[in-house]
Image (cartoon, rainbow, N blue to C red):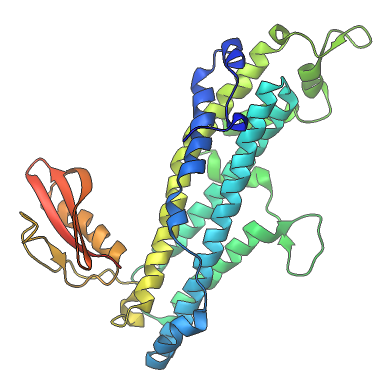
Length: 353
């Protein structure tokens, strides 16, 4: 895909600074977001009552949990799109700032990026924590309470504010608390980076340096780049560290969304009961995996994602290391996954839906 002009840093700008790695990270992040997002393959759930009416008829409590999972999935997807869009715009703002020598905008965007990444990590950690806590649960009360807790966290992320007084809004979390609690153990010196960038955002000497030089009453406005080159390169180095970390977290965020969708699809499966929904099925299978005709098929898996997760669990237990996974064949209602390993190819049979 050809990048738009708004997603490219001018070549003459790239020659000014010794931060090629950061420039590449910014442009590659925008390109990835433009082309591909794992979670975009999942669609929002509609007609919830119609989808779950058979489950309610079979097991009312399972039906309630299925409705909760539908709503959580939609909320998670929406938060994903909101966060992705804001990150996209922040990166575009950085490029605009660089291309137009607007280094105040660059500093503002870089600082805001740290805040948004801290919020994203909070969302990831709590989603993972609650899903882990729910795994293995068979009682309606504990499952329902866990999903309600997750619902509260999503509302806090989306509706948090300190200004608006609309009904339904909640008190926003302190951004410094998010940075200290969720980023400081992941990114060394993150609080120092944030404080450094803050000095170029507040109406004081730091931000003045980005648009002027010289003494008060004797300086010039918009000085040559050489006079602030070191500061801009420091801002870009910090930005590069954050984007490298963000690339990992965006993927983790998408995987958790896929996990929520997997639980929902499992809840909608006619064989599922409340006592089996969050319990990992036994690793029972037929076939030896040596050929397509004898592909391994997991007899207790109820969703496509469960089949895929079982593939990796199977290889872990057999101490087989997969170096590559690809689709070996498409046939009727099945996909044949093939893993290349040191012991040769291993075939798995997976339902398309």
